[in-house]
Image 1 (tube, rainbow, N blue to C red):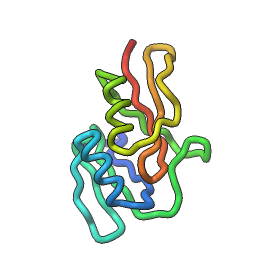
Image 2 (cartoon, helix red, strand yellow):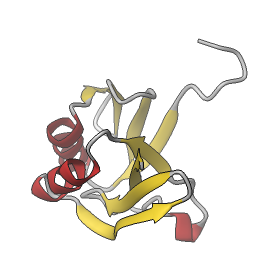
Image 3 (spheres, rainbow, N blue to C red):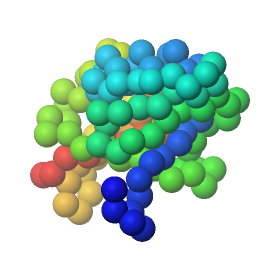
Image 4 (cartoon, one colour):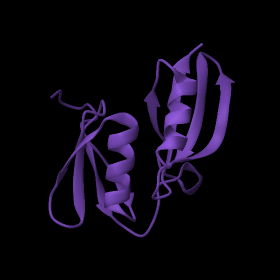
Amino acid sequence: MQSNHINYVELPAKDLEANKTFFSQCFGWQFEDFGADYTAFSNSGLEGGFFSADFTSRPQSGAALVVLYSDALETTLANVERCGGSIEQPIFEFPGGRRFHFLDPCGNEWAVWSKL
């Protein structure tokens, strides 16, 4: 661990089991439960966890947007849909790459990007 670097992120989840299933099937993340209301994820690029909550994390309400990287953006988009995520914003270009936004089964917004 490096001092003064982002080390961990926590996100809300209305349904921990649904999010665990989605992220493990779609992205290969692993989970460790800590009681009934918290699950930590790993194998995601950044350690973090989901806590049981009745709200969502969306940039429109002031939350940070977590952005994943993919070498195959179209394949990842298809995987997100196949695993039960919903596309919030289809693939678009921005300076330096392309990306799309999706909602996980609990309604949290994420993005996935790739280089041009």
